[in-house]
Image 1 (tube, rainbow, N blue to C red):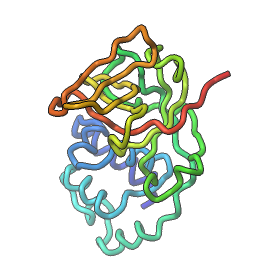
Image 2 (image 1 turned 45 degrees about the vertical axis):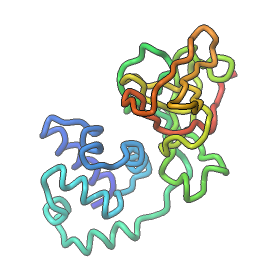
Image 3 (image 1 turned 30 degrees about the horizontal axis):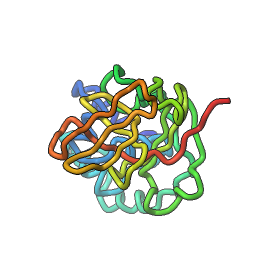
Image 4 (image 1 turned 180 degrees about the vertical axis):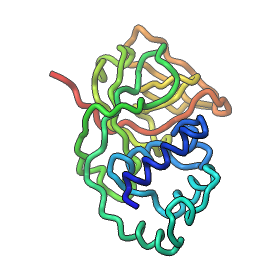
Length: 213
């Protein structure tokens, strides 16, 4: 089974159950972004992640692939190296009033992985998205493409986050008892969020921004 056949079959199974790709990844406990990268790079997930997906779909490796499990494992291990590009998704908004979610599923282009992000630490943990809105102006602008990871908070800086179920790109600053969410545009006030609050999900640090000139 090729990677394309694998993902096409996954999509059919999801559709039959009336579910979404994001639902499948979350139920399986795997990274949505890593799985999207594998779709783009035409790679089957590693054995562990594939077994998790199969379990949520209520099927087995033998049934899904139509072969013995040890043959499947060997085919995954021998899969080719990832190309050094990542897809750019349609949007990851920096607006306060954007719809729920992070990336859209629509790919609008591709960008090369920057040299300093090609290390094992960032491998398969990168995403790129368009942003919308003016809340980060002076640094980021409407229509910019940002490259970010999904490794959570690392240090003060600009991050891709989900705040109150809205996708945002904001500057984060750790302060006593919580974190401050800052818009670089002075028209927007900073927001303090306590450490124990669940309305803030930090996806990962923004490393690069591509401006249109």
